[in-house]
Amino acid sequence: MQATVIEPGGRHRRLITIALLGFASGLPLSLSSASLQAWFTVAGLDLKAIGWATLAGQAYVFKFLWAPLLDRFVLPVLGRRRGWIVLCQIGCAMTLFAISLFDPRTSAATIIGIAVVLALFSATQDIAFDAYRTDLLSAAERGWGSALTQTGYRLAMLCSGGLALILADHVGWPAVYQLMGGVMLVMTLATLGAPDEPGIGPPRSLIAAVIEPLREFFSRPLVWAWLALIVLYKFGDAFSMALSTTFLLRGVGFSQTEVGTINKVFGLFFALGGALAGGWMLTRMRLVTALLVFGLLQALTNLGYAWLTVTGPETWALAAVVCLDQGAGGMGATAFGALVMAMCNLRFSATQFALLSALAAIGRVFLGPLAAYAVAAMGWGPFFVMTFFTALPGLLLVFLLRKGILSLDQRLGSAS
Image (cartoon, rainbow, N blue to C red; front, top):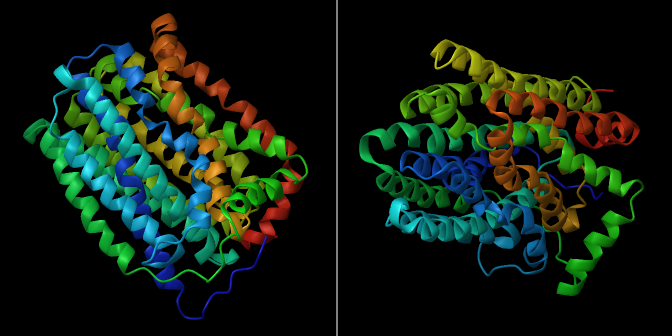
């Protein structure tokens, strides 16, 4: 991995930029997934149709296919990474406005089609942003960079998830999507004011941009085990969250306002605390220890949702479960993000980060239909118990790859 040349005195500006662009990166996700799921739920669509609608986010899985284009080609404005970021932000804004023009009761397929385009722009923005922060931050800054990315990302989900649910009870979903499109346009200002990343030259050709990052990555020892770790580390968490909004609204009986206030708003503050705590702890413990501890906490908190099937729609129970789950999820996401950044070669950061993050998104994108059929077969409570066990293979891989992860600590500037 190549060293990044960082100019002195700009650390605070770099980290603030990462937080702002993390917000822009996170804003479209809920609007093509959880918030869309809530809109379809209150519109009366059946559970299996809602489950299939979760496939709108497939671009997050396949984004590595076009990531080499972002490594190879530089747009004529804003440099190698920021030009792509601002283009995708404008595309996200336009598709959000387009979704607001349709009613899911009569045009569900059209909305899903536009959501696919939204996810395409959003996933491409993620490619450029992930490469930008990997290029921009020094090794010692990556723990905090991962934490602040999660902070910005989850604040965006506070807006497009929790705030959107609350507003939808009062102004309706079309107005919510129009508002979020406006917010996305405002976020282009953060990209325009962001610092330039180091001048790392692109690959010589498009063929080189495709082949060289894959050749470099797949020549590493135990590469298939590393890829399995990327897929499986967040698998149990993704499985439990695949239909979480529908579970809370229909399975337990909470209102949209209760879900929006507690699960999306109140819970996300704990996720922010978890992300920042994870960043702080990464400066004081080994990465392998953080991945094991945070991953186990993520798995255990899945059992809290099974407990909600016993308590029923009690707000205190929802608050307890959400706080624990979001806090653990924030810590786990910070450690996982730091791991992925350390695994990337800077010359090919767009392609390699896109490949790794796309693999990590497999569970989030494709488990919706499987979760719907599993719930129909076994019920909500046993389903959430099962998701605990699906998290264990990822933790086993962390333990088996502990020596390789320990070597990545040096890239992260972790404590020895």
